[in-house]
Amino acid sequence: MTATTDNTDSAVAPSPVDHATYTAVAQFLAHEARLLDEGREQDWFELLDEDLLYTVPSRQSTEPRSMEVNRNAWRIRDTKAHVRTRIARQHTGHAYSEVPPSRTMRLVGSIEVAATSEPDVVAAHSSLLLYRQRGIDVHFDLIPCRRNDRIRLTDAGPRLLIREVLLTETSLKTANLGVFL
Image (cartoon, rainbow, N blue to C red; front, side):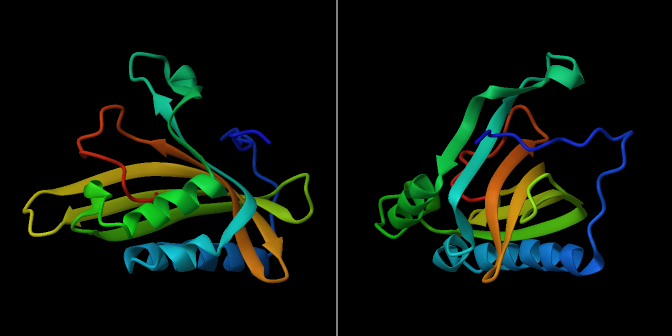
């Protein structure tokens, strides 16, 4: 399994999916955002495929745009087991980046869904703007990013198989990435 998704060349139209598939994927992306905003990480965890790979590659502003994302260096590179550990740690009281817990609002948009060579997997590209504020701090974070996902369509509903998060900023102003994007 690779950490990247088939990034569709903007000059080439993606393989279309039917309206029902597009709607199911858009609903899935909205639902997972709501679960995370409500602090329901365990419910979100149930939407992850067993073969999950969740990555946030490094980005360098000194490189030409075509080469600025380094897919061999990551801020985060998690499997489903790593995500399980991160969620469990949040409930120990020792995950200080989330004590007190962040209040978040995820705005998901610019959703594109395309067929892949695997009949039960679609590619979903979306934009995410995450608002995050902790405790009584007056400071807040706005974290913009693009997400390249692979979503497996199962009888039990869509499952997140691969997520690659491309942060817009190369130097994050947030103190940590203790939340899921």
